[in-house]
Length: 381
Image (cartoon, rainbow, N blue to C red; front, side, top):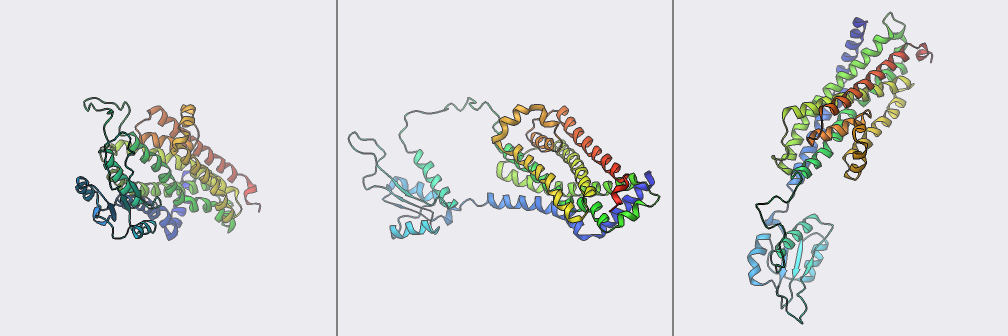
């Protein structure tokens, strides 16, 4: 049986290696997605408005504010107030600040407080950024009625100061990582059996002396090999993505040991094994490649929904109530566990449970496929 399985495995691997489309999907695409996402995040982090490009103007600004406004990027008074307002609307300028003639920060009894007019464009990110910088400056000028947490020797934040940054990263990576691997092997896994069935090649294979269990296992192992390669490609791209996170959030926050990456890799491999097993069942049941690819979208969509729910903070209370049950739900548990690995909030028992469940689920899928292969009805059509 082992020799027959190996023969089928070699035949399928050779077929995969000859298909440039499959090689692109399994090897190049996962890396490109992760690498591209990292580059996109780097570009987004570099979009902070350059002071030299700021088009912000102030009218009647007090002399003592001139230096601070220049530091922000203000360029004196505009030639035409109405035109500047129109430019802000058209995203040709960021901000216009008009101080009253008798502007003062002092509160005088019987006299209304000074009103500063600030024109900006809420649909223009650069405008909102300059507005925020100006407002932050104004906060330093307001009369002090009281202070908050002024004693720098005390630690007022009783939580993990790095949590928000790591949580933003941990909410994004698991789903992105799994989906790049899944899309890389989805076409191969859905077609490897359904395609042979549609071309009647499977009929020829099943009437040979090779055991049907060997045929099923050989094909499954070939897909698992492609999934392993796809996972490695994704993890190479992940290194670039994590560097982008470090640039955005800080290397002191995104600082993981090698074992953390190993734990994530093992988790992803286990869930990939489970998902491949499920897709192969669909490929075995389907009568054509088209129907197999269509039906494969169902488990992929379920996995995507699971990734969305585990990454959405609005569901944190529900996930907390589920507690340990999050780790016993096949495939769902992978995104939940991966997020907790990146948040340094998991236990060995939880990881062993999640990985064991996914491996057991994948093994059951393979057993079911083998049983279907041993059923003669699979070739009756």
